[in-house]
Image (cartoon, rainbow, N blue to C red; front, side, top):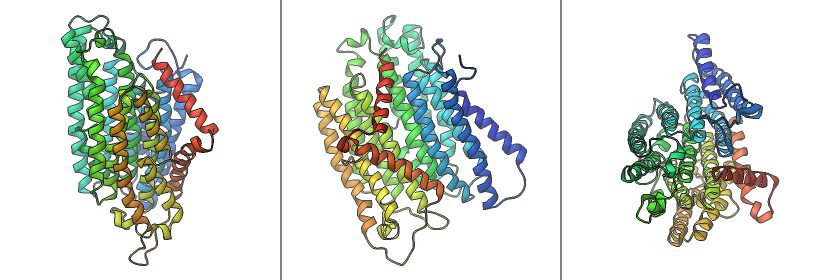
Length: 492
């Protein structure tokens, strides 16, 4: 039996960081002091993430019936958050090294957000889920506005806040209807075996699903997402594209596995119509996101709109949530999160000090000045486009294959059509890198922390991407086993 739940470790780390900052605060300021403070506090945050792993190894996975017990699926979610969190912390060192903000508050907010995300992916109680999502999202909204020098940062944070309020209200209203219909607020109550009011049950389940889809930024609930990509610092954008996005899709997958029951077998019920709804919303996100990416000039906004398209593919995986789509969704989360993290690390390395890399034209000459980073950026962009040889292709193939096996041919056709748009969208920055620069500018060198993120993301994107061609590597095999065990625990 564990003496401490692993979900609590990031929150304890956040409290320790705030205490250290309070006790060690002085009046000195400057880049060097801020950078050193950032390194110290990030080290504490890394230790708290390591504490999560140690707590799990020492018995954190219990089956006592508690609301925060960790099953196989929750173990995958926590592992994803820990790895993504380490990448986010590494990228944050660049932000603090430029003295753009004090390090204590952002690092503490990240840890609080990760604690909420971990609680959300492991809990089987809907009220705990509501509280956990608030803990995960409110710090994220504050982090989007952390760069006070940029007006777009505050604007995007405000948009994200309004989107969060809407999603929370819809989800909470759904809980009220579900409790009135079943008298229960755990996921087992979603099976519909003891329903007192069928109409209230269907309305409640509909609102819960719609609230989660709205929080996941599935079209048409997506307008805040490209703004957050544009206005937030690189490490915050990475957090949004990895931890925040994965958390909601993992919760959706758990809910969709818990909900089906005898009542939902009725062809006129919401459950029977849910695959059609997800197909339409996923197709809308795919076409809308990739079409808008074609006309963007800003790099971050372009990646934001491609991210909307990636969310569309993840939504299509939910159409076959109880079939092959479950495993495909987890592969898709790893692929999209890794690619976006790699892109953000590259853009961060090209934007040191006063030099900014904001538009597609700023990539001109990159192939000559920094060929290795250009190759990695190309790999990440091609992964977002679903090109063979990258992890993005493996994930996209699994999603489309699951749709074909489930008989959802139209959804598969939409996915194939959107792939063409995605390739056209990522082709523009790829061509820009190959053009010669206008002047004799030399590119800025990637810092050590950025090189680490690029190396990890590159190994995952290319290493797992070529495994179907060159044969399954040990890393790919272990990841496949981990994913299969996670999904199997949902079906018990």
